[in-house]
Amino acid sequence: MIIAIDGPAASGKSTTAKLIAEKLNFIYIDTGAMYRAVALYALKNNLDISNHKNLIKIINSITIRFERINNENHIFLNNIDVTSEIRLPEITKLSSNIATKKIIRDKMVEIQRLLAINQKIIMDGRDIGTVVFPNANYKFFLTASIETRALRRLNEQLTKGIVSNLEDIKNDLIWRDKNDSEREFSPLIKAEDAIEVDTSNMTIEEQVKYILKVLQGDIA
Ligand code: DC
Image (cartoon, rainbow, N blue to C red; front, side, top):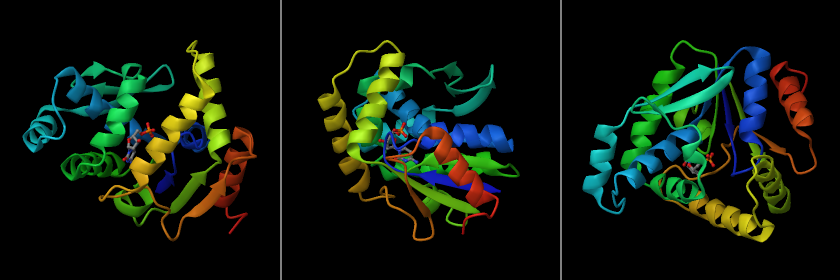
């Protein structure tokens, strides 16, 4: 049983997916965290990602796994917990760039499919409904206006004690939308059969409620 949730950055995918997973007792996989972990590896090892040899080196040197610790998903890169480190701003940009590389995507998709074998999975990302699981049982495509997404990111960072500027956040999101949607391989795009949910004027509770209704067959 697979539920795919795709959409641009800060559209509410991960918060929604996490809550649905808890309610339905599904395993939640954040695939963005995987691309972030690969970016962290490249950065830490000073590997220029425009050099194809380095990309081969990366895919042959990394292991990525998830572990549930105190009710939170943690991601391990080569057995080291990198859950917090992958959220650094320099990793955000590099992860979007590294995600344009086919050889990296192929490796991530392989891991993602293995994770789903015999599991009830809710997976969020950019290409889950289009490429990773084109036959997913349910597909959602979450969107929200750039203003809403930037404000959400700003508030999220404030709760973490990070002071940011709304305009900078907005520009970063616009850059990432473009980079993720215009790439050659598996671009961010709504699967034809995905249900689009515009969350601009929805609270998290409303998003979760809406998706649960669809899953229960209350909304076609
Ligand atoms: O979901 P996120 O913002 O943490 O993802 C970081 C980057 O990883 C995002 O800019 C694009 C890339 N990504 C991807 O290409 N495919 C996915 N399935 C998930 C993320």
